[in-house]
Length: 493
Image 1 (tube, helix red, strand yellow):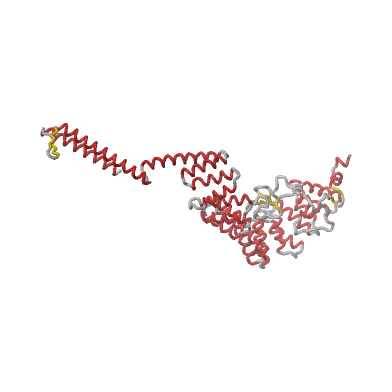
Image 2: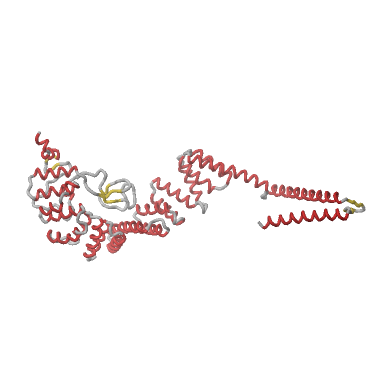
């Protein structure tokens, strides 16, 4: 801005000077006398003006020729000049064209063509940070893993591309199944860019898969710190990690640490069923049964679960069936209409041999929500009340084809789990298990008492429920025979 103003002022000054000189010559009427050696030249006013203009043109041409000569000398010497800049711009233009063509070929799935264009762009541009990534991805697309690895390693030499190189090598290790090396590379990438959400997610999954629960909790804390995770979700997943760590401590025999982690998991997520169960176990082992009961009641109020009932029973394992019914009243009252609560109440009455009370507690559940467990309980009630074998077998036959009921299912792949896990055994999903009904639930298998919680067991009634073995045989009679026996149409025929 200032330079432009100075140029304008200089132009105005030159024009003003020329106008002033022309007026001066015209007014005085005298010419311009120039003496060179012993020779004088007298120029009129107009001639003098023309001479000045020609002199300026000559000086301008001289300066241009001088500049051109200096530029040629610098070009020969290898210095940067307008000529070199011209050739450099032309080379750069062709390089970026090749780079653009490489990107388009990569997007079109033409791996070999992308590699050719990337190599050409690298020769023209001399900027490997732009071309090595395309070369790596193109080599992977073309199936040349070694070339891709070399390209990713070259990215490690540049500070700007080091993160991309580490991520590329990490993905290669994951694809080859080398999770141990992939974990180290993910940790390296996390140090380079702790705010990168995808990389921190990958690091968290790898740490969890390798049961590095402490490291996973630190990674989770970093995700919260950098705004990559909502606070409520952080608490839930931190509880899951603490719970998994507590289980690991129990397996290693470190009870003190296991108790601390279990209680911490329940504090972070009081409605997480496995956390409440393990926290209750820790409290019982620490001699704090009231704290254990409180943890179970909070979780039961949110989502009744058979494991919670078993943990509540374990608080006082030697109590009589009558005392147990009385103590469980506080738990049942937290969520009395839930199907799990009604089945629990029925099982407690069965254990006390109060079969009418069990029927009343179960209500219409066998018809409104006929799960295998509810139907098995109904068979137990019928047997306890002295019904004939055909009636009992009819209920058990229904149980064999009824939905199993809620179970731990992975939200990602639908894989059922016999017990809660932090990591899905099929898809390695983290914190993906939910207690719910499967879309196509498994039917009852094995012994019918398998459906009853530990608080009842096999000795629940004077006349035990008939056995159902894995081949579908009830007391030695095939299920088909039982179905025929209880089907009115088949009986009539």
